[in-house]
Image 1 (spheres, one colour):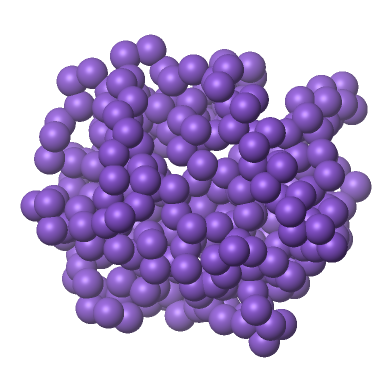
Image 2 (cartoon, one colour):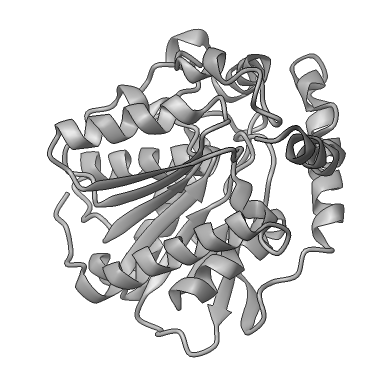
Length: 310
């Protein structure tokens, strides 16, 4: 990433996440960061032509984002990022609305439980419950798509692994944006990209681990860190990740696992981009192009996908 872009990005993001590394010693600070994010997110508008509807699914507050003319028999279950500690429907409303519009699909964004109040596996249980509720509403597995960014990407894969284990039919496809797939922080990019990443450093991973997991023995649990999972049976997956982020090797290792298992996976590594750069849609052409490609992928899957067995 150019130094100019890196400085711009740091200025933008520092207002959102300033002080989050204090959360290990001051859990109350996480609530402050959440409130700050929600306040600033009020200025983020949904994409034109996308309506926002507050709802409750399986006892969980959520939002339905409905692009004009989207079919009612298909849905994108989107799990927001935020290191398992922060984030909400509101913080991700703009991003998801643009994805939904680009794909021409209604999206459902649940406010799953967050750590440290609700540690692993609470968020996974919530996501699985919402997926089961969609099935109970009458959606066919082949008409459900699942996606997530950062920790939401990790939660996406953990949800799929849990569904597989329970024998529940898989959704048609998954989309991951800079997925956080290794809470143990063992990937090589935690070191090789340390001087390039304007968002994270390795110390941030320790903060997440301390707050999300009750003990260090859980860090390599496949539901916490899916890079250690048996990926057999997972649906086709599309991954976008920035070349400058310390989580790069989470994506490359997971894509390699899927390829080795003979599964369908597409991995895009975006030069000079950072963690979930798609959030800056409307601010950068790369973000707009990336979301357009996500939309095209989901459109193609909606036309061709068939239900997958667990």
